[in-house]
Length: 228
Image (cartoon, rainbow, N blue to C red; front, top):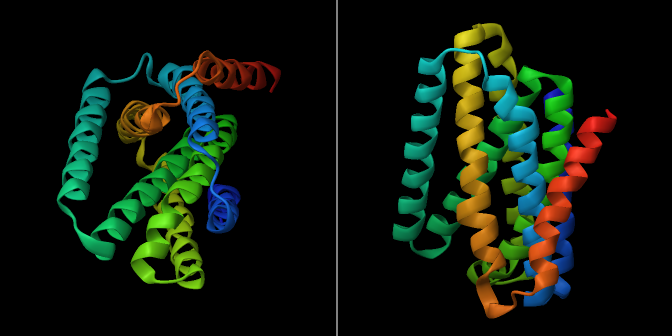
């Protein structure tokens, strides 16, 4: 088992913990807004501090290929998610999202251990709050808490599967590693702008504190990166 796969067990466990907590008491809208802003700041910092510098000085065509592919794929997933109805469509959309997170984490470890570890922190928070967010709908679809928690466990297992596919990319050469890094960067930017921050503004609970938490998350990861 590769290092990348082992590290995905951390966010996978976080998803299960988040879902278990939310089955009994989901945090309020104000708390969720603070959490989403903080997580968005950490993920955005990981992109700016770790992934973006790794793309500098490499093939422009590789960067364009990876970025365009990432945009098309993420928008395609959004379209399918909006069209999907019922439990199968919802679970499929969440599963694809989690699988891509695992793939991006594997790509990050292919680029370097420090990049992978910092991204693990970012995605652990993101997956934790994904578990908090989706388990209520899963319970409504599946009928009870046990089935909902079992569904979260199955979905969380897609993280190491995605990572197993992403980790070997270091052997493909600089062009393709750059391509997949650009893809990962685009996927994470989409996560920040179209998922975390959108969810952060739902419920009308925006406060200066919640907004400040975005910058707190950004600065925290920046400090951690400088100290490693």
